[in-house]
Image (cartoon, rainbow, N blue to C red):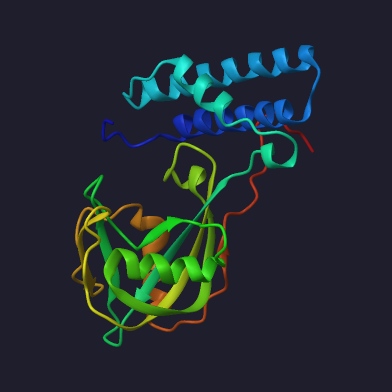
Length: 233
């Protein structure tokens, strides 16, 4: 994938595509009417065209059929087929020296806080603790929820995803990078951060303030006005 920063318009294209695809896939999971299924399939094809246009803007080459097949394979039945954003859990971990725990992702080479998909059977805080230990070898305890963020809006993902970001305190363990997921790991001071640091403008000030012990409300994405460009009040 080319290293091209999404513009506001390409983010809009991705958002519109995923929203349309979600509506169509959810509709297909509930209907037994052939006519309705055919109409939802047409919506999927339109959504795939929009997503392909976003790919062109990002200099990524994937065919429309790829998206349609991927979405069709994910259609469930009834409530399990209701399409919702995926959930990721991240952890801002500080140590006694006021340093921030970061990992270098093996796939992209960028640095970020430990993060992973939410696993069934765990609470969100348990996922944070588990991901930190798996990716870094550090044991930690959750302190507070820092933020709930929309990955699509932030440009972190090109599909629907919510990120739950926790502040955690390091309690033990030793630094050890995961052999498959990370290619580097370490604690870093505010003046000694590694590069490139993924999306730091969105989360770094919040993370550093949390580690300093500043009182912070839970951050979340505000409501657009209008939410969709065609909406009127």
